[in-house]
Picture (cartoon, rainbow, N blue to C red):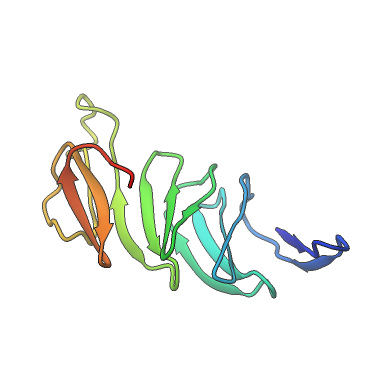
Length: 143
């Protein structure tokens, strides 16, 4: 992983990682946020390369993270979505859609962790409002 000076192309910093980075890097609030094949989401200082936080999903990532005002969303190779706090990388919730109703290894079609709704319910969509995560029935509507 390398950061280059935009005007000159010179290397500002370089970071060796145990896993490969196969996607783009998101930059937000002075952080470079990226996923890797070693199963981690990392945030480094965009100017120095110093790691600020990392989150271990224990499954490889092949797609990049989506970043909003205060959250980082990353889906691992198993299709599990991890929602992390942008500031410290702490897990807000995890959504595991499973492999369908016939899969005996998955007892629930959805699994939420750290949600306002304590019981995972099929057909519910996670949403955030005022710093809390909710599971509500219906489609995800964009405003």
